[in-house]
Image 1 (spheres, rainbow, N blue to C red):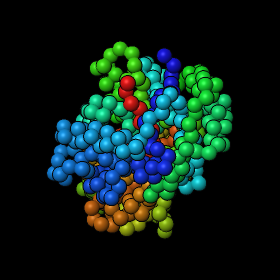
Image 2 (image 1 turned 90 degrees about the horizontal axis):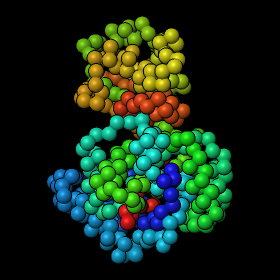
Image 3 (image 1 turned 180 degrees about the horizontal axis):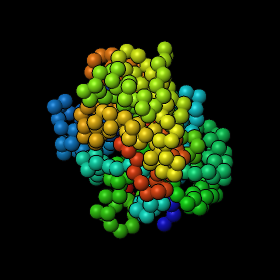
Image 4 (image 1 turned 60 degrees about the horizontal axis):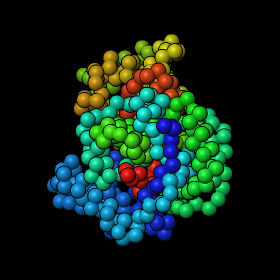
Length: 406
């Protein structure tokens, strides 16, 4: 069983792609998805967030929601908005955002290699979210949200993808968030064979965004047993050097019975603390921006407190947790503690300051983004990243390619 295989994608008819492509199911709330899909009957949100077509009081995990997803997908196929390729293909998928481009391969990846840790994870999953994706796959008999993964340095693969992308794409859509999505079809046998062979030669690939989707696909495969397309999961593989991880920042409701002056004094024991007239965007893993009492500060952790050979210990969030969040703010489990919240870097440093200025939060911390080489080191060590360590941007579009389980 090779690492990846071509597949018969269910995808938008090119002329209808702009109507179909939608943000990933898990970046919008139900109300946001309902607003985004308003007046767009063929938005893929009607499949990925089908509760938007039911009473707003409906539990998003109700059986009726999954039945609605199947109904909506069938409607889009019957209307001729979605088509399925007659023969298995690969698909080159390019994302362009803020003058950055990443070009990857849409394929189906082996769940056997996921089980053996050749396809490596770095994140824990939650049963509720896994269950949701299992029910979605079973209801529509398809995987609709591609998993974004990274592959290590492979010039031969990069060259093949670039050669395909030199032609005219079958889809070229710029979404509302100004992310450009382009797709090319790879149907010739020689290129398909070369891509299959070159990917199979890789020692490992690394899940970036999509741990719940992968885990759900593995559960469906285990339940169905035997051979078949259910033994693979929908994936887009990018060169890891092209992938962009944004900062994933923290805000905390109180200073754990300290006033700002006391808190700054405690910080000064392990950090160089420098006031700043401008918002502080960290430039290294041991640097932090902090917004406190209407003012920005640059924090620099003492170098001797940064472990050298510990892939988890040297992460920006681990350093902040061990030196501030746990000992000073008294937060032992950020997964469950209601005093802490997480803000993806796409909202900007202004979003951090706004949460504090509103009085909702007492302090905000801007973190240096996790780097792909650090994520890969954690995965190679068989370890798990701290919660909310990575925010990949741009996101893949739901609806561009789906994997029907034959």
